[in-house]
Every structure is written in C-alpha cells, then in structure tokens.
Amino acid sequence: MKDSHQQCVSQIFSGPPCGEHGFSLYEVLVTLAVISIISAVAFPAYQQLISSQRIASAVNSLVTALHTARSEAIKRRERAVLCPSLDGQICRSNSTGDTAWEDGYLVFIDRNANNELDADDVVVWLSGAQEGLHIRSSANREHVTYQPNGMASGSNLTFAFCDKRGEGTPRAVIVSNSGRPRTSARDASGRAIACPRAS
Image 1 (cartoon, rainbow, N blue to C red):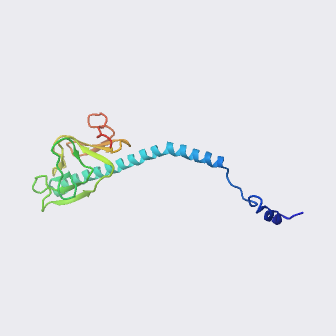
Image 2: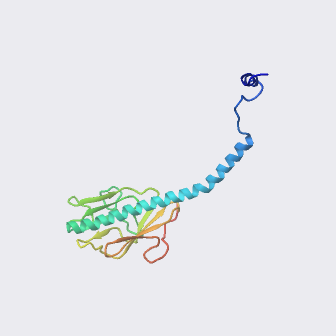
C-alpha cells in the first residue's frame, strides 16, 4: 500500500497536485456575470450619491460665506460684499442672464461702497472653483451686499446648485432681505429648480 506522499508524487505527472482544486470555466463565467450585474446596478446609484454630496458641500460653503459676510458687516459696521470671482481679486460681472458662481467667489469689506474690490478693501473669505457644478444666481444679481445692520439690500436672491451632468438632486440657497440664507429643494417660488442643460 502506498502512503499519501507517494500517491501525491505519482499524480504530479498524471493530474493536478494533491490538495489543490481550481475553478471550472463555467464557475468563473457565472461569477463574472454576477459581478457585472451588481456593478451595472450599483454604479449609477454611487454616481448619484457622489453628485449629491458634491452639491451639499458646495451649498454648505456658500451658506458659510453668506454668514461670514453678514457677521463681518455687523461686527465692522461696514458694508460686506459677496461676489463671484475667477481669480479672487476682481468681481466677475455678467451683463445678461444668470450670474455664474461655480468658478469661485469672495467676500470683502467694501469701504467705498462701489461693489468692487479696491486696494483698501479687506478680503475676509475666498472660495475656489466648484468642479462639476453649475451655481447660478437670480438674473441680474451679480453680488450680495450686506449693510452694517446685517440686512441684505435688494430683492430676494436664489442660488441654484446643479450637477453639470444632470446627476444628483439640485439644491437652492435663498437669501431674503433680512440677510439670512436658507436651503431648499425648490426655488423661492416653490417651483422645481431650473438647471442649465446637462453637458
């Protein structure tokens, strides 16, 4: 009678080594099919989650900037301005339509009340570009100005946050004349948030 060691040695040339088992081609194909199906179902949901998180982060950043502008205006007893900016040095203007904020924005103390960042003005908040998003404000609202009493001059203002690919849930930040921002899943009129066409 051969011992188990001799049997294993004799099988080296005649078949798979003792104690080793592999997967059949059928098992591998079934496993790959199941993984593909799970990925196809899970990936869009994951993309949706990522887009919604990106929008939530951008909303929180803008709300913080608005609170900072209001707080600084009250504390310093001077006007504070929040405006979109490409470079953190010049306020971006938009002659027609909605104002784009996704390329960055800043808050500064506007000492001469001209709504422009001048040499003697103080920057108190700076935010960079928000990748993959459209952030648009109400038509012809190129800045938010807080008075020393904390009020935001002008009419109500709505910021719309949308994913550029049309994913995620759009959000809005609505600023009333009192200067307090609030977030919403709808615009100030209670309608669905209007987003630019997905790219």
